[in-house]
Amino acid sequence: MRTCADLSLYLVLDPGLCAGVGMVETARAAVAGGATVVQLRDKTADTARMIETGRALKAVLAGTGAALIVNDDVEAAIQIGAEGLHIGQGDMAVAEARARIGATMLLGLTVETPALAAAVDPALVDYIGAGPVFATPSKLDHKTPVGFDGLAAQVGASPVPAVAIGGLKADHVARVLKAGAQGIAVISAICGQPDPEAAARSLRERCDLLGV
Ligand code: TZP
Ligand code: MG
Image 1 (cartoon, rainbow, N blue to C red):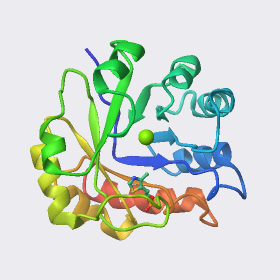
Image 2: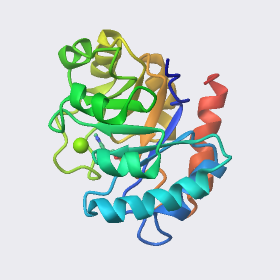
Image 3: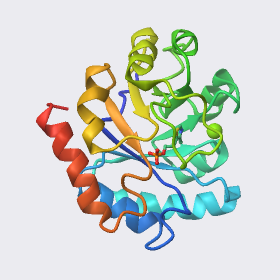
């Protein structure tokens, strides 16, 4: 049986926004500040580059307890030995993804509506990415923002834990948790910040205050 990772502070890496210090250093700093999950998401990389970056991330995260999740690229996730794979609705079918990664790796699925959340098979999927809560320039083709009420509806319909995403900052942590999500997922609140460790710590402190 799989145990889902601590989803409380979930960093999604973006190579463009991390351009200054790079994704690996951003991840190291974020985890030092209290991030519990790091997702490698690089729409510009082929599988070879995903594997290269993923292995560097795995080395940096070793011994920290933070989980490494790979976005979209199932082959890279396997080759890296990541803790999980995250896919969207337009990516490979959930059953196929589960068959490829085996029984022990985590599988995350993005949902954008309560109906999609309700359709999640908890035998296959370990957590959902729910939202987008707000519009965000970090994902130009994001679906219609749902706000905190929409988030609560998605989370309430889901048979598995949820992490909220989309335009979220430290001030939103309380409302994310009140909506029932287990954690907050962010790109720009950490990536590209002048001090990614301090940015992560300020998110972590809000989570800690609320007991997650
Ligand atoms: N999926 C929905 S919104 C989003 C993703 C990957 C981007 C979130 O980025 P930010 O900067 O935290 O708004
Ligand atoms: Mg995807």
